[in-house]
Length: 165
Figure (cartoon, helix red, strand yellow):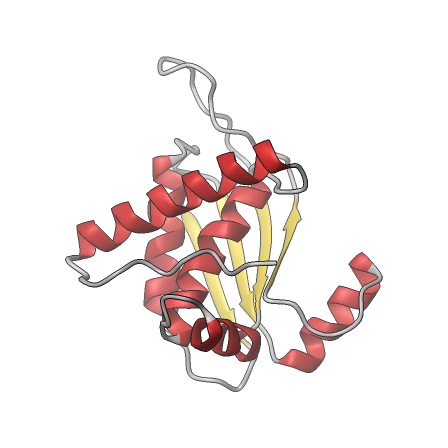
């Protein structure tokens, strides 16, 4: 799995954890091991510009996903996953820090960025949360992936509750 993490935000973030949780999520979703993903960490100003440009919404947001090859997880266990470019995930640590602090299970900016990374991966794979049933499926899968990764890493304490918009 080729995953690039590029921090352009000026904020120190745990890039290794972002890389690790992205790799875990893609493996868990059975994405081809030669697929490629890019994660870009930007400041609030850059995120706001992207949010306006692509969503026509004001202010910075927490995470945006830009799919490339529209890869999907294989539907059957014996099906060979396709290889390709997943796309880009853009994260904003300033928004992540605020969301982590305001969440019911208060957590760190880095924990929120890990959650947002998984959220972004799921968006790249075609998951959405516009409808209640889609939201239940996506957020359930997101929690299972984050919990699995945290357990594998031996991290203790409650997993971050979904705070993504």
